[in-house]
Length: 359
Ligand SMILES: Cc1cc2nc3c(=O)[nH]c(=O)nc-3n(C[C@H](O)[C@H](O)[C@H](O)COP(=O)(O)OP(=O)(O)OC[C@H]3O[C@@H](n4cnc5c(N)ncnc54)[C@H](O)[C@@H]3O)c2cc1C
Image: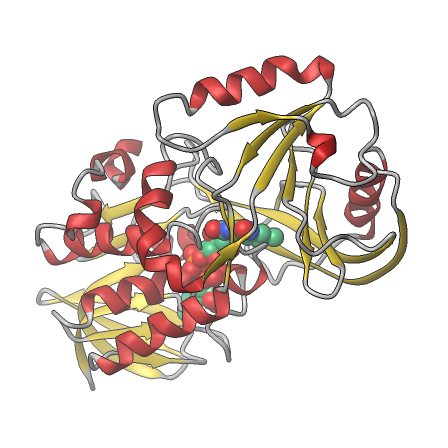
């Protein structure tokens, strides 16, 4: 039976980014239940990097990830829009990020969105928002891990594990193995996996989010910014070839599953879009849904379990798991290996993400 220093359950962006960081220092295996490592949330994201997304407690992770993400980013820009009765939301948003260093400017939204309906008078431009090449980023993490000697086991769903003499004896669909430390990077399944290891669940709740790819008349200009409603009722962004990606910003609590879109959520999204712009929808080309999994305080969880020795959490990445992946992995790797974290994350207080905060 093969032994590793570290076995990571979950081959999404969280598990593979962490594996890439620890592989030069320890033997590591990533156990992924599916045929493809990006099958769940990682392969279904809206793929943007926004420093304001997730709020001020997420922003340090997002900002610290920028340098590592740079080869996978391309310019987009984001516009947060509102109507007169939403002025307090606009003001609150600016106040939240005052002094953070994030570039935010009040603008007339009509200058950025052709066909915007006249009641949408308020806008904040976040010019640094960017597209992320998620496939490229995820592939790079897997490649970096493998080059350092790490292994990715596909169709290797974690089943059970018992702690014997300071090691985990682990059963998976691909056979048994042993490891000194087990990392829970199972995304929407983080709580059920923890329970199987004898740990207390942290209350990590998956929520379904829907995206649709549309054609519009007139076609969306390819250089248009990403547009987000300040009241989180929708967002949309241009895609290559005049396509539009649209979400109703839905958050439907669900059990961990292979999420599928509901017709009603797509209809709600289109209705909200039509309330913002005068475009005609000519086709719904594609629709999909994925799970965004949050801890009760909506901050991620990085650190050793408070009760079960040899169990490390890397979970609760919500709607920001791609844009924070490099910094989160470096922070988590420092904790996992008991080493001083990389200089790029040294200023980030890891305690705020500790699993022990839930008592
Ligand atoms: C619609 C949508 C839009 C989003 N947009 C953005 C965005 O623009 N920017 C951004 O940064 N983030 C975005 N996100 C969030 C981002 O996708 C997630 O935060 C991120 O993908 C989480 O990564 P993960 O590795 O934790 O989860 P996952 O990618 O779900 O990986 C977890 C893996 O664990 C595996 N697993 C589970 N149980 C077991 C088991 N027992 N044994 C073995 N393997 C197991 C699963 O098969 C899965 O592959 C979006 C999410 C959605 C759904």
